[in-house]
Amino acid sequence: MKGDVNMEQDLRLDTGYLEGFVSENDLGSIFPEVKKAHALLTDRTGPGNDFLGWMDLPESTTADMLGDIEECADRMKRNSDIVIIIGIGGSYLGAKAAIEMMAPRLGEKKVLFAGHNLCGGYLEEFLKMVKSRDRDISVNVISKSGTTTEPAIAFRVVEDFMRKRYGAAGLKDRIVCTTDKKRGALRSMADAMGYRSFVIPEDVGGRFSVLTAAGLLPVACADINIRGIIAGARRARERSASCDPDGNISYKYAAVRNILYRKGKNIEIFSNFDHGFHYVAEWWKQLFGESEGKGEKGIFPASCDFTTDLHSMGQWIQAGSRNIFETFLIEDREDSDCPIPGKEEDPDGLNYLSGKQVSFVNKQAYQATAAAHFEGGVPNSTIFLPERSAFCLGQLFYFLEKAVAVSAYVLGVNPFDQPGVDSYKKKMFEFLGKPGH
Ligand code: PA5
Image (cartoon, rainbow, N blue to C red; front, side, top):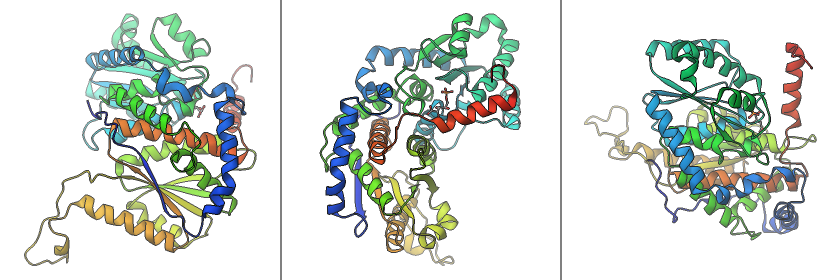
């Protein structure tokens, strides 16, 4: 199991490079609004208050529920060489983020994803690859509504392939559905076919569902410690329970974002220096973009993978329009032991680094970037993850969920609906000629 629980490992938010952009006065003035947002959440009286189930998941997810998920994941792993996860948006990104962050960076993946796009070529190649490897497969199809077109199509294709391979009777052992308790086509199919199923609670929205079976089952299939994730979320929940402006880093982050937004910084770049954090940023983009981008308001969430993007987007960030701010996600611990070898002649002039770890150089790159961007007029903060563990990841998920809820209330929008996404879904049904649309 990867990711042992270590209660000592708390997330930190460093706001040193906000000096001159966000003052103590600014924080003091916005604090009453944060307090109001906090009350809307705790009294459950704000817009979208029928979607607050995510707040309690760290406590309401019992050991028995985790045991069920682990047992199901074990069975799927025993049954198959490849576990296929079908889902999109909130039914995809949390698990993808966790697996990319926690699983080894290279090597053959046991958990593969489909249904997160409508690219026919992808699905065709995907099936060809599964067929050609002649490996046994199991599927976890995830859709809260049970009607989203992308995963529905992928599931139909994959289920058809599996029926031919395993026969109708063999499907029950290999297909698991994660969906609403009562509603939607996926629920009806699961019940009709007798597929094993897990529930995404009604009061938990898609992008807030990573701590339900929607995120935990795929993650358990990748051998990541889901109890560690829940323990981390519980820790973040404790830390964000009171409205203390300094101790509650979710609220501090929410306050800082709104202060900067009001000063014309309407783009936030979530930057990392670690290959494994790319999908954490994708998950963050969905969480913040879908929760805040409405009513013609909202900070546009963008992301960069450094140092790669320093050689492309770095120019824009350093010297383009000054309407941006940046949030770095950094692992405190140097995670690799890949030392730079010395060379007798020093032909490339790198001997001054010989014996140093590549991760040491990366750490200096982060520090240099944060300083240079600040000097270039880009206020920035850093979320420090003490280590790459399930416990820290669980904290990160909950920390950001709480932050976006408060941030959106301060902004004056309902964090829990997504009328824009629904508009696209409806329009597409019209264009496709779906009966009833
Ligand atoms: O946050 C949301 O609700 C959406 O982005 C959904 O996660 C996404 O549209 C997928 O929906 P579903 O899980 O119903 O297939």
